[in-house]
Image 1 (cartoon, one colour):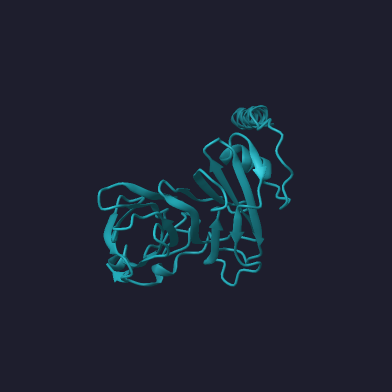
Image 2 (cartoon, one colour):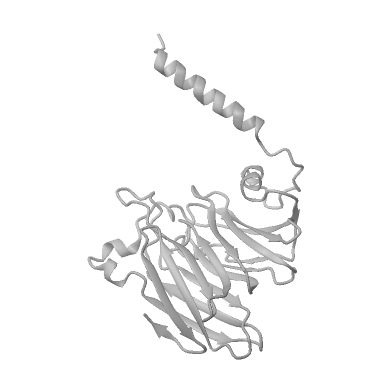
Length: 266
């Protein structure tokens, strides 16, 4: 006979499933060009409001990933005006949310590397100031295990001693914009590898020397080990340096000043 505890558990699961179904997204979403089984779910979770498929959101990456631990992706939404937020997702990852960019005083552009657990759409939503989400993406074929394999850092006895070590380049591209590329040492543990708890860099902020925010990136577990980011902050003519602040889930903080055209190692 079924135990009372098991019966209660089954009833609870059914009740939660029904409540989720009743609370599901009732919007009429555009047809997903990537035919992902996760489209309705992810749109409901991450893109509240009006959603349109927009080819002006350019998502560039490999069709076949050579390394599922380090898949390079570039997002360019500079064809859109008044961008306030960019959200990147890997539909079929166990943790789909890759990052969120707030381009406060920066172009709607970001480059990064992501871990993939399996072949998956890489989906990007770009929110403009009118509340509309402009969505586009690509499909990347990858071998399995990118999110559940331990970081390579754990094969090094003293990996913690280089935590936060940074190499970065900041160079002016035009009179009012610059390109900032950085790589910071961090294992970016997802918490899905056996015996290794979650531990990842979750915030990168770029400001002027006066403290004005230029760009803020919220990072999540799928970002690759030793995060590599490319941003395009808007800079004044006389601005010759930027400040970068980063923080991880264990409250470690990393700060450095980055002069124009100078490569540094912290």
